[in-house]
Amino acid sequence: MTLQRNSAPQRTPRTVGRGHQQRTVEARPRDQSWPGTLMVLGIFVLLASFWWAGTRTLISYMELGRWFALFAFAGNLLPYRKVGLALGMERLEWFLFNLLAVGPLVLSSLLWLNLVVHDEEHTSITAYAGDVMELRSYWMANDVLPPQEAVTSTLEQVMAMPPMGTVGGHYLGTAKGILGYEVVTTYERILPPMP
Image 1 (tube, rainbow, N blue to C red):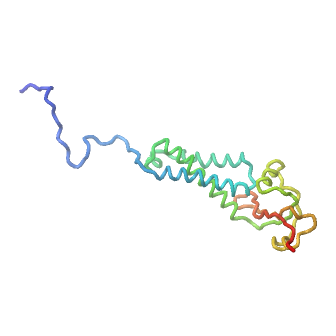
Image 2 (image 1 turned 135 degrees about the horizontal axis):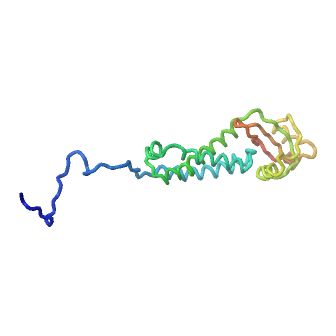
Image 3 (image 1 turned 135 degrees about the vertical axis):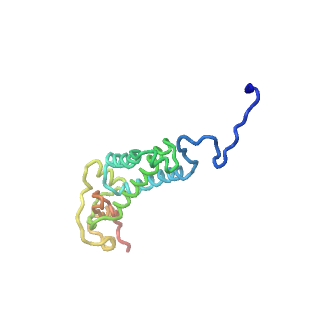
């Protein structure tokens, strides 16, 4: 038997079929850009939806925050190895994806669904002169919309011949959305008729 020399480097022969000598112990995330793109898109969609659909939906900010938290963190309850890793994401990326993409996109789509799909519109005239953001602020402070008179006339009829004392006020249309939250469907300023 010959003596083994430690000074001579020995190379192991490369095995055919596998690229490495050992297999990976655990699956690795892939390098991809679509989760980051959806996260950025989710933030901008949420801002636009909150600005437009959120101001016309009569829901408190606290309740809106609760719904956002539910949608943003519910995805983290799914097992990471089966869902997040299957999508090729690291753990932090999976958490941020749910927080910045899934939560905002789901909340935005539900806000728009509630605004677009609603029951019959109830129209009225109010002397309140503020814009729709101030109308929402009034509702938040008092839990009721400003004093109003119910009307059966259309917007065009009211604009052509406004009732006495309503010029400067608003033609207000409200309805109950499909998700149960009241929405402002029409909010137009009543101007004096053109001669």
